Length: 310
Image (cartoon, rainbow, N blue to C red; front, side, top):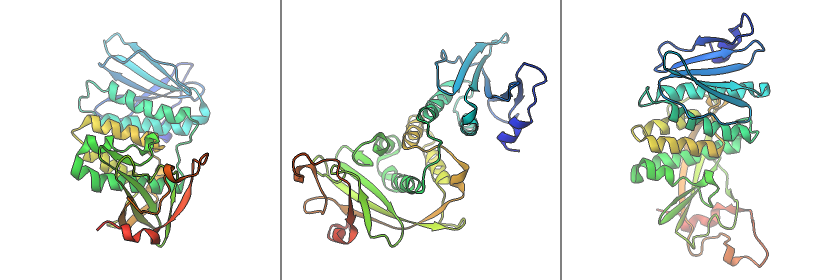
């Protein structure tokens, strides 16, 4: 039975909320709740003292200490039009709770997770990315997993993933940067979003082009966005700071776990890197006429072949 179905089956007998233990095998005591008007809530009972609640759009947080000494941390939906998004939020909090290192100290982890979601909900975003955003994120996650993590380790690699924070390139380390473009097999151009994106004046830049093919169903070398994100998160196990920062970067990109992402399968067919240095066919601020900025253009990959990294 899905969490959505569990909520729908809860029927308050009077004006009081009704609560039901979510999972007796879960390391944390989560309860789902419903009020007389059908409003949904998620309750955590814990010995960990929660912070003073703040005001948020769409969700009210309430805390109080029970007679048995434990604390109640309650997330209550106040905007019914966001019921589905709230359901996904609660699913995510519950799954995050399974991975806490110390079950006696879960609040900080859950509140950081909630903060990521709250930024998304406050923006009015429904949580579903379009196909271009999905494919772009897959390309960045693949580069992070296959190229940076083996060399720089968890925290340094995730810290260098600055594209979601609106940096000019997707990845920046102290002495190098990488811009990741994801294309379909057979595509011959990539879209460059500004004159700064391939400007190598500050540091050397590599343009990395990942070719992703669509698959009709699962295959040994195929993956979905959710599986890729989970795999990366699990690879950071043992480094809580890196895991937390990874979740923040995902949220900043606009990713929240959605079931729709489990039905889209991809496979890498090629990955090429180009050194965007002297002579590379790219625009830079220094080469633009005065009063021209915010330039977007298509780059033909055929003209980049001489700069292909061996």
